[in-house]
Length: 136
Image (cartoon, rainbow, N blue to C red; front, side, top):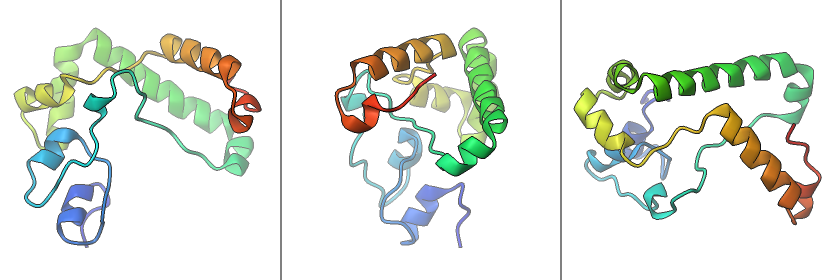
């Protein structure tokens, strides 16, 4: 059975029908087809974090630590791009140059900008689900 961290290998082996993967990983694999690319939707946030409500309520501190780690990594990436690419590329089995190609249309949003966007979105939301959520 393929590793859970290798969805494209699983898809190629017939175990998955579809998955979200980095463009370079998908485009370099035989039999893989890009169905939708975030490059076609500039400004669209394509990454989400999903948590069970009961677990979030039970462990809010753990989720705060998790998000703090993500935003520290984003701050590091934005401040030390070349070093970050050298660290990250091997995890995708790519050279830094190949990984730069993956990153050319990617933007990591810092915490302050994400918080501002979520506040604006929550106050302007018209759907029932969105308007009842607290983003703070």
